[in-house]
Image (tube, rainbow, N blue to C red; front, side, top):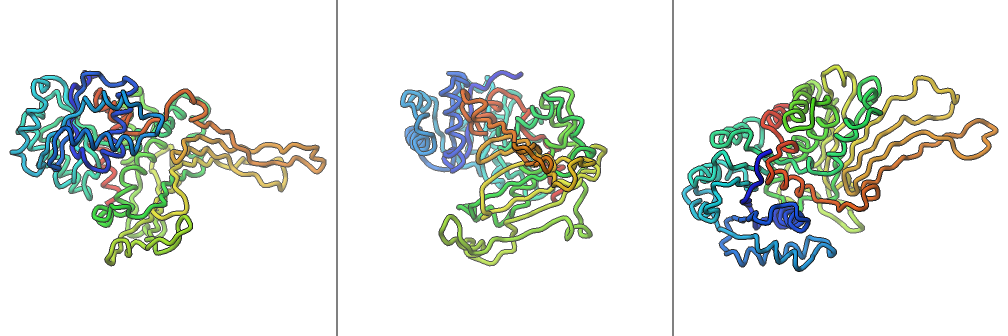
Amino acid sequence: MPDSAKTLLLFGATGDLARRMVLPSLFGLHADGLISPDLRIVGTARTDEDGDAFRAMTGAALEQYLPVEARDPKDISTFLERLDYVPLDASRPECFGPLADAVGSRRSDDVAIFLSTAPSLFESSIAGLSRAGLAGSNVRLALEKPLGFDLASSRSINDAVAHVFSEAQIFRIDHYLGKETVQNLLALRFANSLFEPLWREGGIDHVQITVSETVGLEGRVGFYDGAGAIRDMVQNHMLQLLALVAMEPPARFDATGIRDEKVKVLRSLRPIDRATAASHSVIGQYGAGAMAGGPVPGYVEELGKPSATETFVALKVNIDNWRWRGVPFYLRTGKRLPSRQSEIIIQFRDVPHSIFGARALKPNKLVIRLQPEENIRLLLMAKEPGLDRGGLMLREVPLDISLPNAFADSRRRIAYERLLLDLVEGDQTLFVRRDEVEAQWEWVD
């Protein structure tokens, strides 16, 4: 394991993601004593302000986004003391000198960089970091999505980064991989012998992966209309979930083993081409309607111009390998849907012969809920209480593992807490490797 970083540089430090997720996550790690007391956090963005203004903005963000019970004034005060700020035009590589000066003598220690900028600024940011001496072997770089628009642009970004940083220094973020239930999927599969004999085409009928949102554009007009549901959700989050469900057991739980097995799955995805698009995909766009008891505009009304961008997609995906031959994976995602939920449903095959006559039997299901609440549920058939003089009466009943209840003494963490801690400590297991990203883009293209 590499040494923990002594400095964390936050690009895009005044943006929405930083205020909602990154800064509250770092505060959570600070409050629980999980990051070293001498870790310095230097924010940078185009906004022309000083350290005092940045600390004030951070304090306001913590007040807005942290639960009331987490807002300990002493912890907030000591966290703000860690922060500094350097204004920077990331489009100008020659302007990175003051950022290097802020790191100062700590440049010889491990440095972690969280790069959350527009994709158009990746190449100039990398060039600026290199020019300022912030790209040595002791530096690790986290890249926030989107990493390209298609395979060609993704390769262009990856090439620019690889020109300065080795793959061992690059941490590509997919925040879904930081969710507790996603990590629990690995524990469920590989720490229990119960499911492994059934986790294949002989035991599983199909898999459903659903990520539904009730919101519309929510201020993402410029990005979303150039991306759509397939690029925004399927290419990254949903294919990563599919890979975790379908991967073979790695030899050990480490970055190389986990990512080697995921990329094998991604390379086994059967292409959806012109001949199969109509039978294996559905796309749509939300119109005007009602949500939460009030009217909401349609996509083109929110956008303010005509558009054919899809806001909903459903796909039937096949994996061409021995384990998953003939088992369809159904992926669904969209905006302005009736409920907000992210879940994986593993539907097992029917019993080969029912001894209960004409009574309807439902196949067993394993339901892994990622949000809004984290939960694992196994649906089984059981006998209803009673004398049953006409024969056994059966009903589907759930066995629940409610993670908040099972681990009531543990605080629920934001996904970025896990990922930022791993970045600071140099653990790449929950980050995405270049060959994974490019295998995902190749299939999506």
